Length: 164
Image (tube, rainbow, N blue to C red; front, side, top):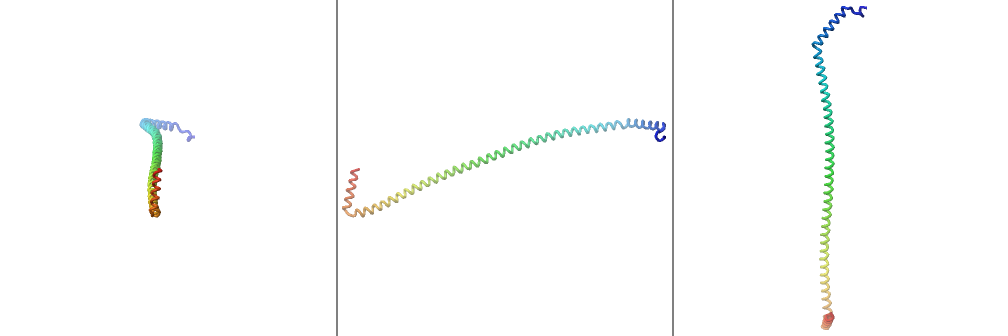
């Protein structure tokens, strides 16, 4: 049983060694250990606070980035809308200019055709008058070759003048 129950002298010396060790630890090691633990706790707290601040700042930056992205999308949509409107207006203006230019060209062509038509009609009238004069001249030369025929024509003209 000696192995299970130590002797009283052994317990006494073990108690003295333990108390001496406890005194040395309290006197020299306890304060530095507590201060290092407190320092460690403070650094962990400050790191956690910094992580919380960084997390909050990241959330703010993310929200700000989303806001900027939304504004950029709106601006892009406005620019595209303005460009499409300007494009449509330019196309419409070009169509209107082409239509008005075409109308001017048609009017000019109509005027040219009308002038050429009048010139052609005048030319035809002149040719008809020329042909009529030539035919009349030939007929008169043939019919008025004698003096009696000339006298009859003059008498007939005088009657027509008196009647009018």
